[in-house]
Length: 421
Ligand SMILES: *Cc1c(COP(=O)(O)O)cnc(C)c1O
View 1: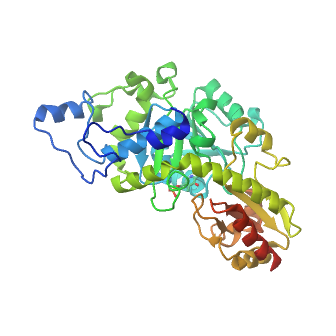
View 2: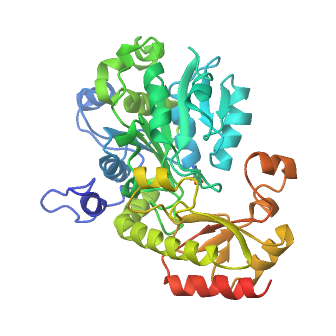
View 3: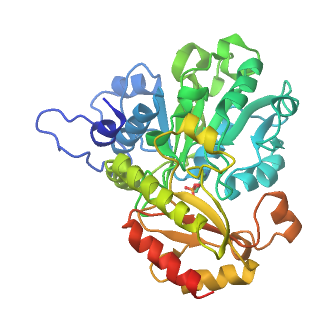
């Protein structure tokens, strides 16, 4: 099945007489007649459900659909995008290990890596995504367990150079994890370009309507844990799980460990209700992404030509620094997120935002409704001008998430607000 068909049909196939639409299995636990049946489930000898913290049919349908879209071997749905990143990292890192990450990552991820993980002995080494392969590779040592980046980073709109980073990961046999939230598998499949694990905040385009928080970890099944000594824990029996040796599971080693060990102990599950809503949203994902991209392209062009706009960043623009990379990895569309600067700095940026009538000021991005945010006065207000400069956030930067309304209405709202400053 093609991607747009999988969005509609993937993950769930009812048997005769069962509900046509994936039902909400609103139950913490599942019934079995024989003790033996349950024991087999615990031993991973049989497939099935016994407790919703580990697996639930509604959540399972969502995981299967997303894994199919990405071409991965399995998915693990989580309570949020942040918990997807946390569980994926903890699945391979212990105290004393390190991760090497692009500095162009979501604010929450940056905080997790720079402040919270170090408290537990996991160090993060940040690289500038525009730096050379040689310089980035110097950060990798024998304690490095993950190389991390985002396909398109928010709000700086940096596009990942997959070949450059995948090559470092491959040469050093380190897992390459990619947060694909702002692109979705409809526009780019990181596993096709050398990633080993793909992460999502499903709270954004996957849900698409801003109704359900969630996340997902996709195991690419393309990393052989037996070929390196870097991941000892995958090679030794897990005494906390009947002596299971995860590497013996082959192409689901990462995913199964994440579920039976990380999810068992940390419990950041996606609820069946949220899986249902996200799954419903995903039925129109391919259609919505097409419109988001088409609208964003028109809006970026409009802003680029407006006299009160100092600069615009969207990879669809031919003079954008990342245009060539975007054409290589996401030729069918570059997503609905962009940033731009109005002339006159911070004050004019605030004035502009307040003059908007339809486009709302919210902290969310990537849903059906167009919205804006001014990071310098909101999400990043605790940072000094020097700090903002260092991470590429100008004080006049406005982040715009272009929705699926009619492009003319989005543009006329932007235009009337620009006319007022
Ligand atoms: C929103 C977001 C996250 C965090 O997801 P939550 O669902 O809000 O926890 C992670 N990565 C990216 C790129 C995001 O946009």
